[in-house]
Image 1 (cartoon, helix red, strand yellow):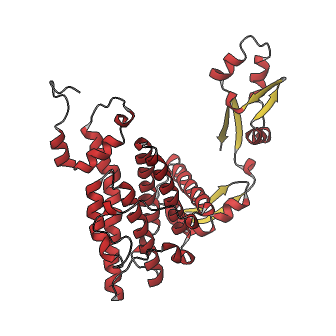
Image 2: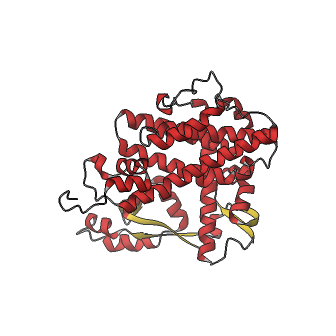
Image 3: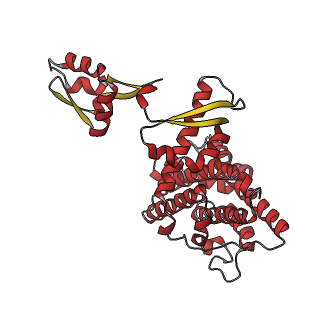
Length: 353
């Protein structure tokens, strides 16, 4: 970019159109913080607004709307339960997952900020916001709107409030204005003597990691649930079957019974997300999937240059059975034609349905 040629958009105009916060986040998440070059793009700033700010603000607005709805319904003032771990016995599986993910996020941000690696901070914050808005809020929309019992309603509102407040504190150094705007509204439901009831979000410290809220089981269950939903949707797209069209059954193919058992709390969510009536489990993977391997020639070729067994090795790789490939995946290596091959030398696990 050249100041003389003015081959860049006017920064003041960009700030006026998209906000100074959007420009700040765009720059902090750019190669500039690594001392690399950046071709400043107005579209890049617009992308920050579209992909980060709008979903984030919509989640905040949805929370405030439903806190007001809860107050009108109950006739009481909503007060945030700061000691959120007290509500853990009443958490559902998505509450446990998002609170655990929040603790992991806090640990990551504290570590990277301590080393002043800003380029590692923003990506994990953005990824977390995507998970919050695309999964937690969507899966709990009816619950947050009070379509369950009043107690369950209050728990879900407290969880979303806790997550958004702590994320806003994490983001406040990067985007100081929108986080302050949200905080000034959110502080109205804080208890008067709460440690969080400061005059500004910029007076708050980043929360410490709450080890009691870390939940690796819920994290794994949620990861498996998301994998099932995303895979099922891709299969619908491949078969050109609209998501609006119900399907009779969905079969989850996995050798581990525990994986399917862990999906138990999510089965109603799977039915809604995939629009399916019946969900089944199949432990016999070979019934549906055959695994194949091909030589990874760009890596294998140089390693076997001048080796007379190269042809035999290639032929042996192509003849590997599903069982042999499963063992290879577990052990990391296999002996073929007198040569020990590691998985990096093969293009593995192409599923044939």
